[in-house]
Image (cartoon, rainbow over all chains, first blue to last red; front, side, top):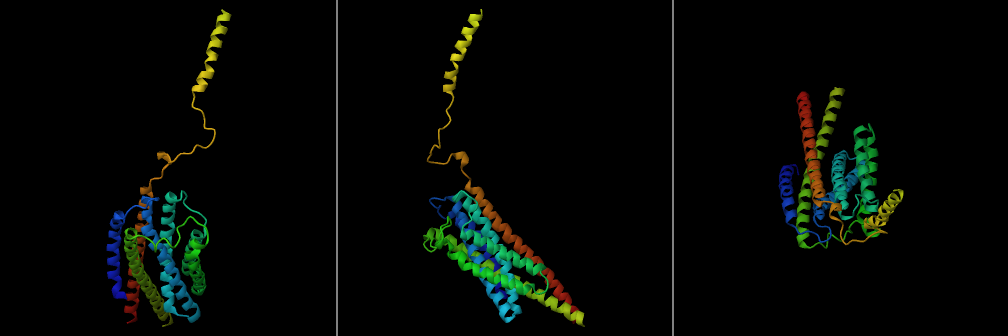
Length: 219
Length: 85
């Protein structure tokens, strides 16, 4: 896995460099025009935002119920990436909405629940940084709430009335929109995987440093 | 003389309704138009550029921060391990 990290970063960087050219070549959407091109970065980051919440939640469950220290490193890594991709989603969405809807933000279920999830990630990271001993288990509990939020975010657009497009839009996209979208998604997914691996490695190394300091104190 | 002044004033005042009628009338209610006036339209290019700019800045900033932290921890780890030996 570690051997794959550097090639993954290189490949995703090359693809992200190419993505704007492929996106520019894609046709304009009939009602939204140019601003719809935000979609090609907004959708992948939103999916990876929810993926990060699920990874963080599953690993936090392993920490809480099986006291797995290795899982804790993956949970922290996923939380940090969730915060990053959440910020991208929550900034690009309103920039698109301002033109498409005429407003920056609406307090519908999808947008509000997405903001709540981002705040959970923020609280998780603050707790891990400044919470002191025992904060890892408290943060793990919070991550479970974050993960529980994900299905709610996903289906909300199909259940409640909203200005946000429904989940049926992406599977029914014509190829002219679908190819740039899935190209961009592949680039973001590879970047996400590589960054997750690197961030987990950092956390493992920090744990090792802590162990060495403790051993030094005991000696 | 006084009568002439009064007559001139009446002539001048008689023009007031004509001047008032020539002024553009305020709309009596909301007037529908088919398209948003050009001055009111939001330029999409600014919003798209801001969105893409933010994505690049956020990703590059995170990669830089992660690389810096990894370098620091790796240096600390190798120092501690060499002390242990």
